[in-house]
Length: 303
Image 1 (spheres, rainbow, N blue to C red):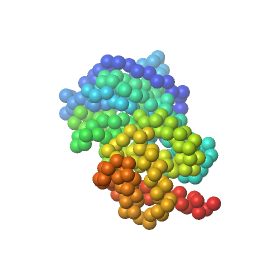
Image 2 (cartoon, rainbow, N blue to C red; image 1 turned 180 degrees about the vertical axis):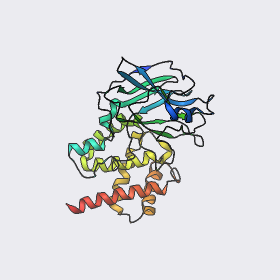
Image 3 (cartoon, helix red, strand yellow; image 1 turned 60 degrees about the horizontal axis):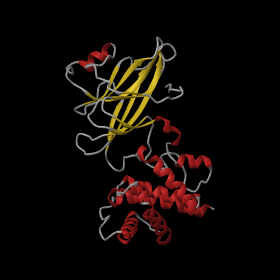
Image 4 (tube, rainbow, N blue to C red; image 1 turned 90 degrees about the vertical axis):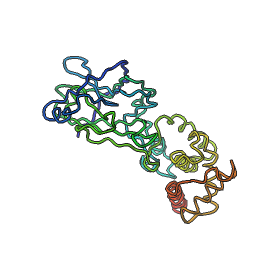
């Protein structure tokens, strides 16, 4: 599969209007349009001609809500998923710890209703035989949940050639889509691209205070606290003190299982706030923290 390799340039276009039907060609178009004349997509792609050879591809927010971000890359859930390692103080590893830092030029914030944002381009000759892929993430309420992150994976040969629905207003998936996923379980939710700068500032502060190895460990714990909304979903940089205390108690108490980790997290939040403030801590969150602790111990023991 050929991925886009052009130099990325952000562009926005306001007041884009859905034409009422997709312009997909052949049997795909017939299959996707049959019985859907009145359907409207929440989100769609639109090709806009630049010249006789090049089309720009835009993601269009066709909903009534402003999207806090549209990320044209894969947001990760944790540093392990990003390929980073605890205990590795190299610059290469630190860049991975920062998750999607190399892709921040492909992040749009505050995408308005009926606004299109450029996600790529296609060349009528050079890309005609290439399978082109666009991976798109954005926050939006789902059909059965108040909040979710939608992940769209578009793969088409030579581009899209017109209008390309991503998700219908009834939350059904258009036929041409490779996949459209609604991520709403805490264990599935990635760290939002909208907290990137806040997270990087916190990492630098932790490195100054505790050194690189400990900073990565504390940051990884804070990632878990944020994703699972421990402590009533505090802003990312406002749970770092609790993450520091949890890291210290893990090293001192040496928990053997997730239940023991839950006791440590509960005790930290009871101390800083009040009893039962974080009583509904997910066991999945505790298991993730336990895995981080065990990995950290393995690093220390190997030295």
